[in-house]
Every structure is written in structure tokens, then in C-alpha cells.
Length: 533
Ligand code: ATP
Ligand code: MG
Image (tube, rainbow, N blue to C red; front, side, top):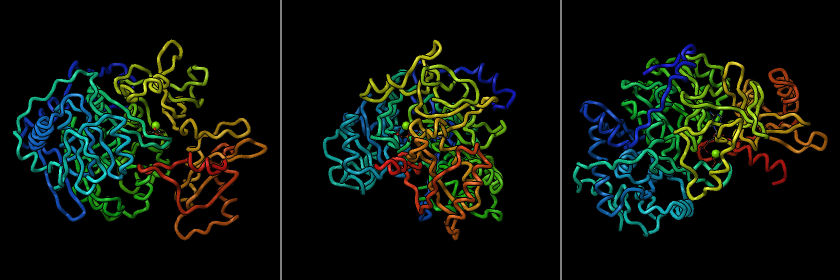
């Protein structure tokens, strides 16, 4: 594997070929290959009670074969959709890869889905099988070819028992690179969740961000804390790390900052992936008496990590914090690299094999420094097949610009003179004040540097004179009192860090910020509130 350095970035980018094979099955071509080494460990699972289970790649090979046989015996086959709604249990990886072997299309879902959410997904996708825990079976109807439950339930096949009845030999289906292979529903930050369909080539290409961003080797222990239902879990818990043959730590418990540090220390995690919202809490802990010497890299994706957090985590943990940008539709496309200088606040540079540009409204590529729509050059093998059952919406993601087809991410960004990309916010979050475009993230990054600010969101608020002004919603650090003097102080402080026209003319201190299930701040809701619903 060629690690990236600043000097080699351009060359690597140029020389890079995706090497997508004609046919691919993640089960056969990745898991079963690592399984040839019987000693290679795939998974360490643990829960809050202190239970712990270890699985080799060979164990996973056999268990996924049994899983594929079990679904096949119920009439589930190639192309069939399977809802997999499991918490962080090893059955999740077994069911996901078992489906891959069968050529079925797994739909990973978070367990907090309600009966209505599940019905929407089942009807939308035409799912014919479901896998969940006994505690959630009541949310499912009975119109499935196969229903598998971890823990016994009337009318459901018990997971372990079902597996025990099956042979551990299975001949994985050869999928063509463009055959459907996984279906994710988006976080729904901006509306109804969309069904994002990826093909076998998608599963193949996710190794590239694992090589260059996570820089994983066979000797790593990787821990990603994402929930199993999101695309980030797909890339950073399952397909990325296992493509590299490393071991994955999988912790069933909830978010407790101290416990995170305990596990990083106890297991000697070498690569850690956590959401920005978790990292904002982790940097507040004093970890000076902890041994985090094994931790060589921390990454974050899904939301901006404020430069303040990047610096604080590096100082406290000793490991670099590399932000990466991805979407359910494209997976990881713009990332920071371990051997390239980090510009705190930047999402990094495009992955080898990926070209990004900033487009204006008339479809022209903008020069360095100018903000606009972030687009990825098509055809990039990481880009989704499309939104399931919505060809129109899929088509609307593409535009022509300067003789090329581009995929529009729906996000705003700019590229600096060195090629580093800075996120500004979703298209709808950009604030338009007296003719100036203001990206909320830049304001938030400045606010976060203020010693009294714990967390914040900047959104547009109506203003007669300027059309819109910047309003900051701020959670103050513990024991800090919000008052007029502090408002003025924060405003003056921000004016010094960003262009003065960007400072928040309105400030409101709050105890909480609205967030999605994945922990992303919902600026859209705050903005709606400002504009009277
Ligand atoms: P929906 O599309 O249903 O509204 P969503 O866009 O939140 O939900 P995801 O695909 O999980 O669903 O999230 C992708 C989005 O998250 C990106 O389009 C971008 O707005 C944001 N994002 C991802 N990574 C980063 C990052 N490193 N920095 C800033 N924002 C990021
Ligand atoms: Mg989105």
C-alpha cells in the first residue's frame, strides 16, 4: 500500500486506478480470503456488562455461510432486499456479509426505528426478509419470506438456532460490479429518508478510503462508534476495515466519554473513528494519566470538526484528528491524510481517483477561494447507482459543467489555493446577508474558539434591512452565565477571527441544540423557527 505524502499526493492521484473487477462478492473475495489464515482476528465484541467475544475471519466465514444457507432455505435469494435492524452485536456483521454472499441486498437500519419507519422502508424497498432482536420483532408485520430474531420469538427463526441447523459451506454468488449490493436510507436531516442503492462495485471501492484515510494495515485494531444503520458504519466498521484484514472493536454500549477512553486504553485501539459531537465531549476530559500510546489516528466524518477540537484532541490524546467528508450517496470522497499536513477546519483533499470542483449556479467551475456547490466528477465508481425508485431525483443530482458530467452533493464549500476543501454548510444553510454569502461553519468555528462556548449553531434570521443576518445559538460551558456583556464579548471576539460582516448580530443562549439521530446539528429547524415555522 502506498501511503500518501504531500509530495506524492498529485502523483498518487494521477497514477491511481480503481481496479474494479468485473464480478465481486465481498464475502468470497474479502472475508473468505483473510479466513485462509486461521489465526487472523476479525472482531472483538464487548458490552457494558463486560461480556466479550472474539471472532476470527474463519469463524466469520463459516457463520456467514450458515446465514446465507438459512435465508436460502426460506426462499430468499439474489437481489432480494433484507432489513437488518440490529444493535452493535456480532450478528450484524454476520447478517450483512451473509446477505452479500447470497447476493441479497441488506438494508442496515438503526434500532430506534418505529413501526411506521419500518413499514415505510419495507414498502419502499419491497424487502422480503427481516433480521432483528426479540425486543423489536413487534414492530414488524408478518408478510416476509424469512424473519430472523436474535432471541426467541413466536413465528421467528432464532438466529443461533437457525444457524446451527445449516452447513457452514456455501458457494457465494458472483455479482457483476453493477449489481445492487446494499441499500442505505439517509439520515433524513433534510426530509424523508432517501433509499440510496449501491452496487457490488461500491463495496469494492470502500477499501480506498480505508487505505488512504484510515491508513489501515493488517495489524490495526479499529474502533468506529457509529450506529449500525448508517453508511458510516458500512465503511468504517465493516467493509473498510475488513478489506484491510484488520481487527474491529465493536462495543454494544452507549456513549459515555470516560468509557470511551477506558476502552481505547484497555484494548490498545490504534485507529478510532467518532462523530464530531462525541469528540467535542472527549476533548474536555483530562486524559493526561491515561496510556493512549497505541492510538495513532483518530478520524471523524459526517459533520464539521471545529479546528478548536482538532487541536485540543491532538494535544490531549497525542493522535492526529483527520476529518473526512462523505455522503450516503458517495461515501468518503474528501479526506485528510495521515502524512499530509492538516489545515484544521478543512475536510482535506479528494480521494485518489476522485475529482471535486466548486460550481456556480450557471454551471461554471469556480476558481480557488470562491464558495459554491461542491460537485464530484462522474463517473466515479463510489457514486451510488441511484435513489431507489426515484429516477427523477437521481437525474437531478447531475449537471453538465465545462464539458463534463458532475454529481452535485448539495453542499457548499470552497477550495483553497493549496487544494484543501473547506465545508461551508448545506446549500440551504448558507446565510445571505446584505448580498454577502456566509457559510455557517466558518462562524461556528470562530465561536468555538471563545473560552465560554461549549457548542453552537449559526443560522439565518430575518432582518428588514439586510434580508438575513447571522444568528448564533450557543450552549455555554458549565457555570458560565449568559448576559449582555458576554454577548458583546462574543460578538467582538468573532469579528476578530472572521471577516467582521460575518459576526452574529443576534445571539441566543440555549441549553440544547436540535440534532438528528446521528448527532448532527439541525440548522434547518433553527432557521425555520427564526422564520416563523
Ligand atoms: P439527508 O440527505 O436525508 O438529509 P444527511 O445528508 O444528513 O441526510 P448523510 O448522507 O448521512 O445524510 O450525511 C451526509 C452529509 O453530512 C453531507 O452531505 C454533509 O452535509 C454532511 N457531512 C458529511 N461529512 C462532513 C464533514 N466532514 N464536514 C461537514 N459536513 C459533513
Ligand atoms: Mg444528504
